[in-house]
Image 1: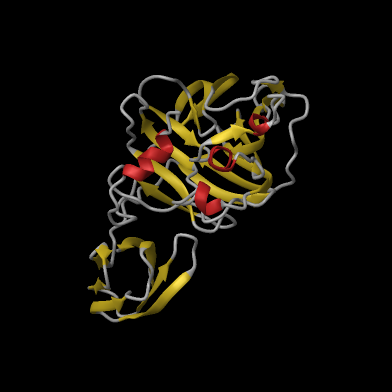
Image 2: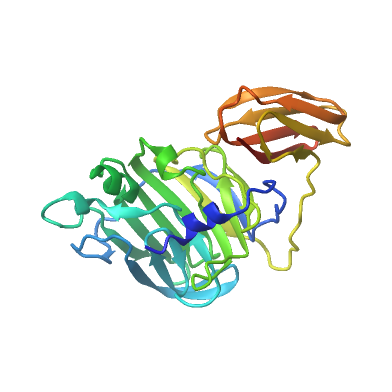
Length: 327
């Protein structure tokens, strides 16, 4: 399989997270709504067991992705939705993990994970609703020969307003850290090109899935995604911003170094009279915390196990998150 989204995160240089916090072209919001499975929609895979296939859904109305017309939605191995199959384009990262039809473990080889869609509403207010149902994780199947973990998810595209929604249904994701070692990466990506395995900017949801924030990464900067799988009934909505709004870049207040250390971290705080820090695991567990004085500070991390960690800085103007690796 062409595991682009996962591979891109692995080859990214582990520089300071948040150095490119440009605003994405959508306003993001979270809500809850009862998950309604699509019962009588058009099935893309019929009864065929799928693994790494690409499927195409024609959009029967005018829909714009980042203000660019989109006539079809291509599902690349269920990881990402794209308007085309060649060239550079914007896309919708859905899961950042290798998925598989749960029927793959059945000797009958009949699909248990239907991919289906339906168009609802009158002209001018139509919604394309695409569902990936009862989906398994390839990592579980190819390592353990089981497909016990699963989830249900829908993507809604609105004719009126070009709104995008990710809707989550029932799930059982018992081994989240294995499937998503860098967090679940979902959101919006600019100018992705599969032929060269490159992209300009990926805007991802980061942190607690019940109240995530928008963060960004490039191929030379990195941050982590969602720390757990969204609960059933979670709705992530992306509403286009008015065109002409310039992107803004955040300047980091704190300087954290070295980013690879065996024992100590140095924090240069040139401006803030009062600030605090927290050393966090990628799952969000607080390992160390304390106050930061103005000027140079040193934090002992000798007792922190080897691995990748985040440092969150809080101060009166907001917060920022940076990354380091304990060797």
